[in-house]
Image (cartoon, rainbow, N blue to C red):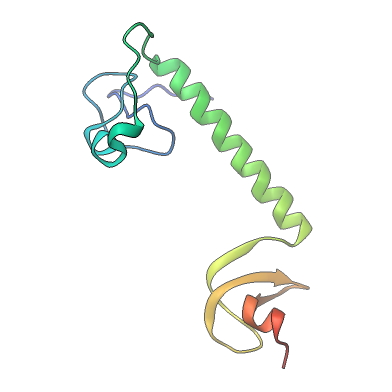
Amino acid sequence: MIELELFAHCALPGCGNLTDTQGHPCTDCRTQFGELLREVPDAEPMTAEVQARRDDAARLAYRAQRVIAAEAGDLERPNQRCWMCTQRRTCRRIQGQWECRTCQQHPA
């Protein structure tokens, strides 16, 4: 579902900052990326509808990847307590229990 925003957001994917002009990068992105961003004078700026469609498609793709990873058991999450070493680390769900990479590589 496409919801258009009241204010223009940065055209760079993943950035939620507001921008002065629809279809253009925000000031922070211009500063951070510097010369890596090239403006094409003849190109039409991205419309809010096209940008919303692109971002919705990316969100759906990420959601599908998470579902596939969860079904395959490959889902890793930060700040989980490993059942083997009891430390809070980035762990993977294995047979219903959270296991950190260290314990997976060097079982006790």
